[in-house]
Image 1 (tube, rainbow, N blue to C red):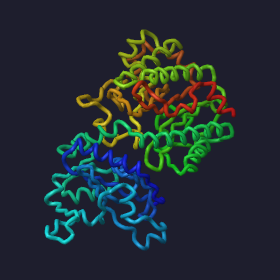
Image 2 (cartoon, one colour; image 1 turned 90 degrees about the vertical axis):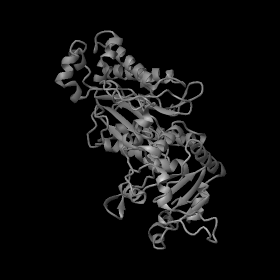
Image 3 (cartoon, helix red, strand yellow; image 1 turned 90 degrees about the horizontal axis):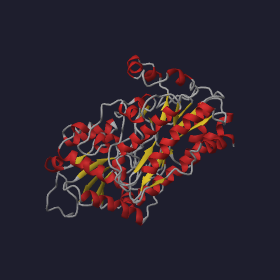
Length: 480
């Protein structure tokens, strides 16, 4: 574990979060951090990532730890490192040192979670006593993704701790709703960390552009980008997408060769050591110069990107931003002769989704798709549900914007064979798509432009604005 460097202001911020939770729930809460998962045998693990809900209230990525929250107080449960661990992992802070660093009120071994309440006449009258049979049924929790820890949760509670948010009930559901309301907007501590992650991601994208002309395969560009993140002692917030096949939305293959006429789509972002994420996408010509067809479609996507960001302010419905992106893209495709008809009709029929099938973005915070483990409870305003429309069913966020939210704006244009060659869709949209004209844009597989945007009291601030989106500026970065 890193040397502890916690400031009073950080502890104060963490305590403020706990007090905000206490104002929303009148029952105690247990949250688990999780454990590392084996790759192929127990001692060879994937990098550990603590549960984001745990991180939100502790600020430290502690492994195999539990916190109890009640009335704004925090009790930490974790074991001391074994003497043998120093051989493999070096000296680590003690439990009491960690408790002090996060502003915990008390700290105990994990075994205390399973002990029954001792005699009330105990000489240690300040010791927090536990009786699972009496209090666990009144203590809420959130199921963690790590399977081993989730099993531990179920054993301790002697019931199934549901991870399917659609089935959560009782105080666990009340807790999930409270956590969503807290994490929807970010305090100054969180924003400072989000800015750190964004700054490193910007440098990483510039490094990828600079490496492109000498790269033979996508993996070399990925290496240049992720090398910046590693050099800043951060990790990737998600599996990087660095590909000339931008039509594959989550392409995690990096072996394709780089050809002069290709566009390269890079969707990658850093995660600060504190867990706060960034998420940036840029698309650039590997030759350093967009073709006329590539430039035309790039400018259509950029127009949608810019229109959405300009429209952001508190009270705006995120769904309306998506539809603004849809209208802007539809209008651009009509101007290029790819789509035919009125823009309103094309949007109503979801014709734009042939080329822009995903939502315009999502929440950003401790998770790159923030709180997506809580499903649409986080992304959708109470009483709303996902549409079954072709152009709306992948919308991750359907809420009015609030000051303090951070969202991504990421419109795109894609020629996805599974969509464009689908006989049913071709029949449905045969009257509004000029397939011959579309064929003239065959050198565009996928374009996406994505930025991280803070909703302010008066509008918005683009946290990733230092990375250009203008086509000519992109070309200059590639050419060096």
